Image (cartoon, rainbow, N blue to C red; front, side, top):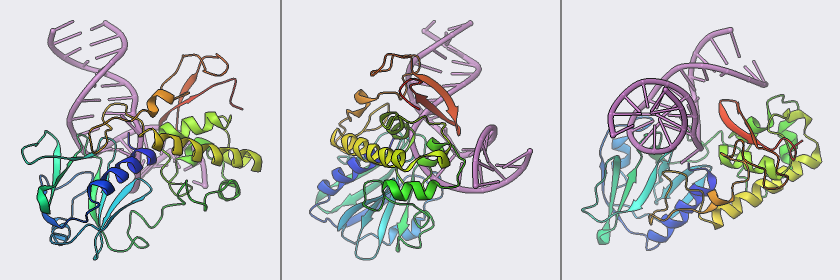
Length: 270
DNA sequence: CTCCTATCCTGCGAGC
DNA sequence: TGCTCGCAGGATAGGA
């Protein structure tokens, strides 16, 4: 579930929890790998360092110390929570112990998450190819239009391509295309400058609203506090196949596009 | 280049 | 009720 909005909400939670810059005292890795092997020896080098700030890049979280950062990706079902010492749950894979008794737990049933280390964002293999942040000034109608020029790939697949723009996953791609009134199947190169501008503006608007509402909680997603998000109540098309469009009452259509469930209103979206 | 499939996993809801 | 099946927020690799 975690797309940019959800990861940003977790970042804000962790930043608050870690705002006193506690020293990391112990890292417990309950298994050797998640989606990929965890570099245990590298990770252990962070013991004794203070967490100075929590950054988000795309859907990755970076816990920065003076020497580098611990890197976390939530995959599909990953959650971080503040957990008292006796709180150990099924599918907890990582415990971070800090001074003062603070303990963070990473739970990820499907193990699509990632945990590792970063020393340089510009050269790290998972970070170096990432496109612009959707909420940054770097991502504009003009920049999107330029990066889609000459591409025949479906627009929704392009929006979910992390080289074009990061952090927009399946839910928000569907929702943003609906809000911009553009069909997901539209050929990327056929997008007019005007439409690119509308799409970018809707992506920003929807992501900001989703962050304000604490993200979308469908099944697993939760804040570090255990709270749920509320944005799932605002879905216009996602997971609404056959239901009436909230704008024009036409039944919402669905199909698989680029291997992902895609939803749109056949009347509102051109 | 584009698109499609498979893969990494567990859990859940639908349908029989 | 209990079983199997298909699908789920992500990211990548490989092949047609």
